[in-house]
Image (cartoon, rainbow, N blue to C red; front, side, top):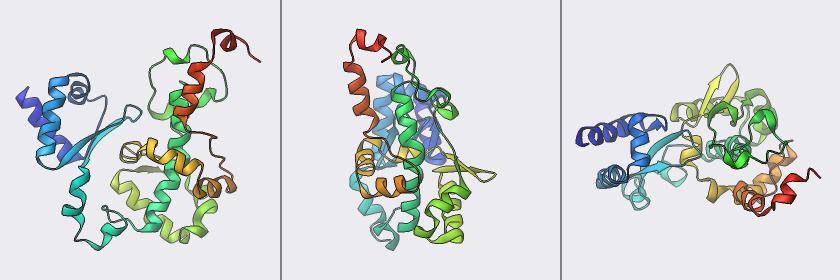
Length: 236
């Protein structure tokens, strides 16, 4: 176990994220003693494991009380400890809203992109899906047309997208933006969802032609869980 712990800790520090399907990551997620020791080793250097069961990757981040000691001396820390400007952070949140909010609805209700809007009374028995079956893509041209004027125009958005891709938040392929390994790990859905759906940003995104969900996915899941057996069978 010692060698695997040392190896996994080193890989997390060197690579910043790893897929949940990785053999050592799977052990950390199911083996309690292994996880406790991994958490201890990360904590010794001021880090914590980012583990979101709805995300396809795990990552590492600073513990909450380490942000100021590590980044407090840098001017950029006022906006982001990754050196992102406010416009770049705004773009990141917009992309997160357009990709992760609908993705989480599909995951919680056990639907895939190909069957959005169709009821599945056995959906709750399915495992949580990851990847392209639930995570959509965005056309860069559409993103620029909808939000470019508010986020600095074509050149600044292109620079911002390049930076977000290098940091692992997004993937860019032939003018299409997809979910990167950190998009659903580094941004906390439970903290952000209601603020966006019921906030000013949700209204801005909706006016651009991207309607927001009426509630966060976990509230919808609680409602679905309360539906009786007779209601579930009634298609009306």
